[in-house]
Length: 158
Image (cartoon, rainbow, N blue to C red; front, top):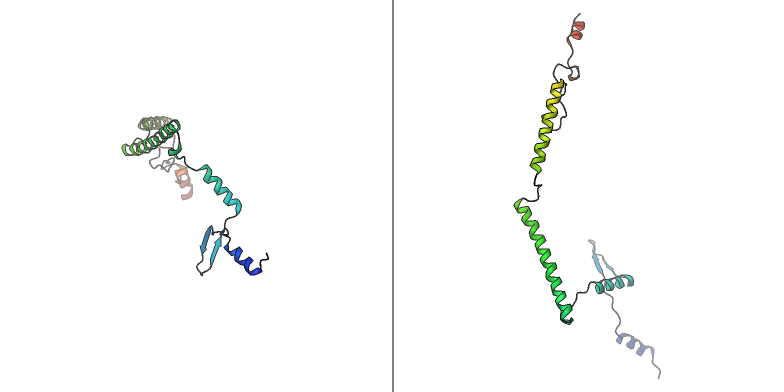
């Protein structure tokens, strides 16, 4: 039996073809539309991800695996909840700061005070800084401060 071209086209139309849907449709401001289709490789990767990420159906398990499944789920949920609440309570009660930090601060303060006392005894020109950005203060009568010594002023006046 011969089939003409017209009947053959009807058969091709009646056969359900795999219609591809665009992966992404991008609408531009000027009114253009671009459809992005996924490749076969991307589709295979998506299928592999879905098969590895598929969740276990507990209704199809026997009693032993069923109990292990729920014990694991309860344990992981309990651990996650305790970890979340523990972090929130720690912030609320201020437990995120070091316990003995005040002792360290006191030690450094005493150490700085001792080093300042030693430098004052030696008669050094540098003094402890009052402002945190400054490292040392210079005395007012010192050449480094910008004053001229008296013998230089006498030479200028003559």
